[in-house]
Length: 301
Image (cartoon, rainbow, N blue to C red; front, side):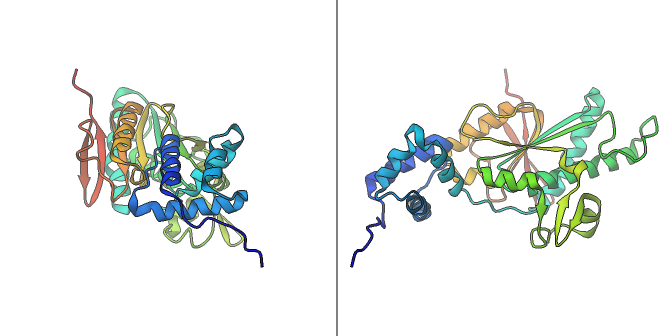
């Protein structure tokens, strides 16, 4: 009987090679606690590529012909876990405090544009949640500060002269494709209440499609946070449950990049279990009713 030879465990040398390559390409760090996860994902890709050794797979990844496979591997190493209205306390801080602050400052400066970046957007629930909260905040803002003219009918989602841009990026092409489709099943919609469903979604059979006007506020793109070419001039950045993939050195580099990508006094939102404490002095923590964020501070000259 012939048994197909298939490696079941990485050698130490192969592990170090592949860890270094992944770190170099996207900054993800796999320490001892996560080596099993890395090995499992590598084993899957090895079978898919029908290769007989991890070293052969490494050679493929660094070859010109291996660019697509490298992208597939990096996609397999991220866990695209997300949901609408995730971490409600933090979103309440964004909705009721950060947005109010941003809108007030921009009105005083006669700068009627708002740019928000969802970095690591996965399948789109986060940026669409942000879009809904921004639309709500603007509507509430103009109840208290009416425009000096009547809006056209039907009323636009974003009242002029405001311009809203929400950029959403991820390293996973398949996640981005699902986000752009903007269609979600009942289970994915479990945290979306009736009012939001009615205002921002169309029922299509057993699923829900984000309405065109809201969908048009969000622009999706591929971004690798390891690169220096990141979206600039952001008023707020959401990068939640992404830094946990990085070691401390890469976290510090990423935070520095975010600081450079932000407008003065902008807001950075990280995951519930993530913190900037001890990593930088360029952000100050904002805390409201169990929600936390970090506000950009200007560097001293």
